[in-house]
Amino acid sequence: MPKLKKLFAHKEASVLVMLLAVMLISTMFNPTFLSFENIMDVIKSNAVLGMCAMGMLLIIITGGIDVSIGGQLALVTVLTGQLMKGTGLDNMLLIYIIGIAIGGVIGLLNGMMVARLCLPPIIATLGMNSVIRGFLKYYTNGAWINQLPESVGSFGMIKLFSFKSAAGADIGLPIQFILFALAMLVTWFLLRRTLLGRSVMAMGSSPVAAERIGLNNKRLTAFAYAFSGMMAGFAAITYTSIMKSVDPNAFSSYEMDVIGAVVLGGALLSGGSGTVLGTFLGVMLFAFISNGLTLGHISTYWQSIIVGAIILIAVSFDMVKLHREEQRRTKVDIDMTVQGRGA
Image 1 (cartoon, one colour):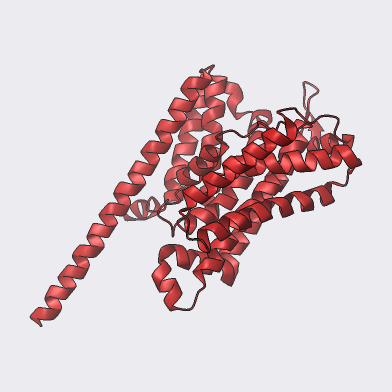
Image 2 (tube, rainbow, N blue to C red):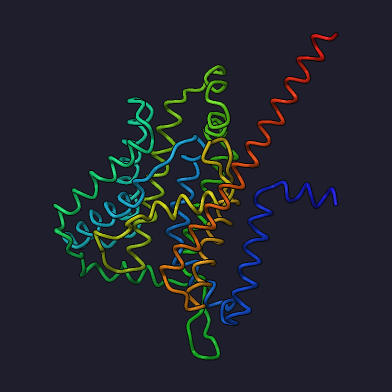
């Protein structure tokens, strides 16, 4: 029992149990839920969400938030889409580099407004999102961008270790799964194996203490937003390869999905807490809940209500737990002070 209690002290374990429960219940209502094809389709369709969540994780660890992710995704898809259509550029590696660079610049601007101008993160990023959306409406007039190079769609259709099923379907690991795994690996390495990542964690846990040991909080904040922007750029090109066209009006309110997935994974909006594994599980939980409701023929309106309620419950539990821990620490500090005076 003590070992089990210790195990569930980790947020990831609780999220994993919820994920398994969702998968079990969904399978009971629709046996095709656990089919390899369905699972791969879910991962492919939510790879973009996962990539953005990896970037958002760093921002939330710092205690910030970015509500311009949807705008960043739309901007990168439009600019790179126009570039590909106008020039015939079909080198996917170069397209990815350009998309990541555009996203990084937008993210850095957000970070500079938060770090240098001391604007509240939600105000800075909300303003940036409004600017981007307004620009896109002016630039595209709401028109889709089609006739992209064939290599874009071909790239999005790549499957590794593919084979033919009994029904003749082509089954394999979609390229989006590999790209999502790459985004997770980069984020994990950054947070766990680099001084920069550990500094971001330290700043999120205690900004005052971080400054006292010589960390530059402003630079760390700017980096977190720039990294998130680069992940958004990476995700945007991946999205274009799936859709084979560009909708300038896409990703409306998408930031709520991204933030919700990170929070479901155990990251605290107060900062200082969050892991790549937890975020991955949060993304999968978010994805499989939506997929299970879809397979259960639940209305999209009810899907939004149910997913939103789950996020609210998860955040409420986290905040109650955090409040209790703070009360316990305060009580311990008071007891130690009283004992010290008594001695």
